[in-house]
Image (cartoon, rainbow, N blue to C red; front, side, top):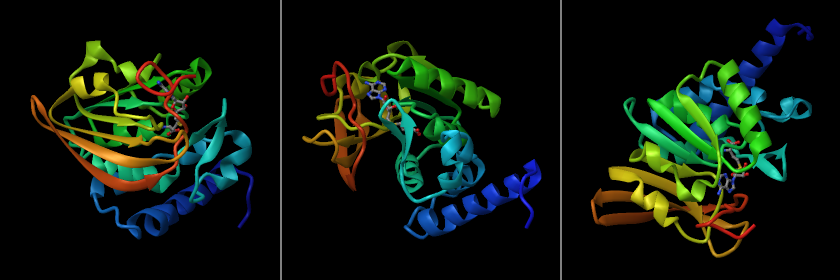
Amino acid sequence: MSRGNGQDHETRFERARRAMVTDQIARRGVRDPNVLRAMSRVPRERFVPPDSVDFAYDDRPLPIGHGQTISQPYVVALMTEALELGPGDRVLEIGTGSGYAAAVLAECAREVDTIERHEGLAASARARLAELGYANVRVRVGDGTLGWPEAAPFDAIVATAGGPTVPRALLAQLAVGGRLVMPVGAMKNAQTLVRVVRTFDDRFEEDDLGGVAFVPLIGAQGWEA
Ligand code: SAH
């Protein structure tokens, strides 16, 4: 196949994306059709640095600058599925990074508010999401461990960085019936993926979705910088 024009590149990435959904995500047990559809729509090659586009559909995280990473595709799918999103839901994401997970969430929910502590990452994610037409995503610079109180409550909250505990502020901003998914652990670079469901105003049920390795969540209710 010839290469070098936009059309061929499009085809190459779309094929890689289809293989990613089948081989890395569906094969490992992700079933939610909305999540599989979202993963097959979001152009991951647009969220990685230019010199990494050839690896955009690899089964691993990739560096995005500032010592941060775009998460492994399977982990994004697993976390999104665990949020059990419906089309009317409002979602808060902590750790915008490249904006990739925000785009996946935006495909599955009504609105996504996402917070990033690195101004540079937030600015490029914002530009990229706008270019791709994700009008239902708002990116804010700040400490996501404090949530986004003016926009609360949220039907779903996801943190894509790992903290020592689930921030109290995030639990307080979860709607009754809402789901929170986040990596939690006593070490800075290895965590357990935890899901918390707010079953009543004063009741939170927690389950464990397995081991993960995220970058640290740094902030007032996370790790110290
Ligand atoms: N969801 C991202 C993954 C980014 S990695 C993606 O799809 O690309 C985690 C991100 O969390 C990093 O960009 C890091 O800067 C950010 N982060 C860490 N602590 C944070 C905090 N307290 N508030 C907001 N962002 C935070």
